[in-house]
Length: 320
Ligand code: BTN
Image 1 (cartoon, rainbow, N blue to C red):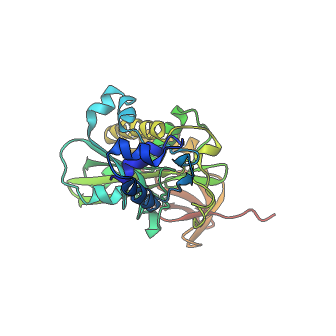
Image 2 (cartoon, rainbow, N blue to C red):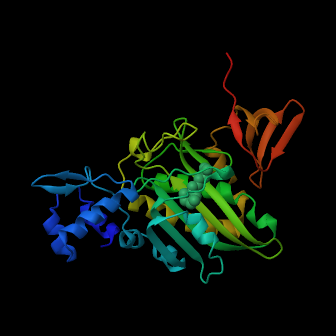
């Protein structure tokens, strides 16, 4: 018996007896019992009560592919060649990177959980089942390396826009593309590429956004983090739909106008502008003063303005 179908059935948080489940899926009580045991693979705890049956306390907010698709605009929907929703994958970015020769404009993959979620700089992205959003979009960009300038910053803007459309204001961007709220990281973006620098690029933009992550799930995360449910009560499918809408629209704009069209919007949400920062643990120190026309970070240092194209930025604590 398919344990994910069983999870879907139990996702309402109500009690279901073994015999009811057995009847519904036309399997024996033993098969039900075995399938319940397998749910541990998803990290989901199933309660069992004598006489009442089985339930998932609090239920599960599972992704609903048709609800996501039906809330997209006609223009965005027409551009989507493929929209895959999985119970579990190793990494949505990896899945798209491994199948790059694709037809059509935009390929989207989302999942309930990732077993090997990829973060920036080789880190693991914590990806528990049915708690957060893990979404990747694959597409082609034409042109030389300049065609990519600022793309990851623009992806960050798309998340801020998607949140705004859901009524969540106040998200800020930490260069190059982290999304922070109230001093804690809410979402991260990983851009991966394949291609010939001279003609075209196969691009995958992956977004991970914490929605209902518990303290326990997030125990191993080495920086302050926040989950969206502290700010708003939203269904994961609505969040995914808003992100797909915003990502596809923004990439279309980016293809036509490049980063310069977004610079002002980026700077409106710039978390670190005006702060003393360090790049790559002290390689460069100075005051962050915004981004240039291609999205590089500008830092005012003791020896003048330095432009940083890539690196890890930390804000230096104020010494008072
Ligand atoms: C970061 O370190 O800030 C980037 C995190 C990116 C995580 C997302 S989740 C969906 C996609 N698939 C992955 O394996 N990683 C990205």
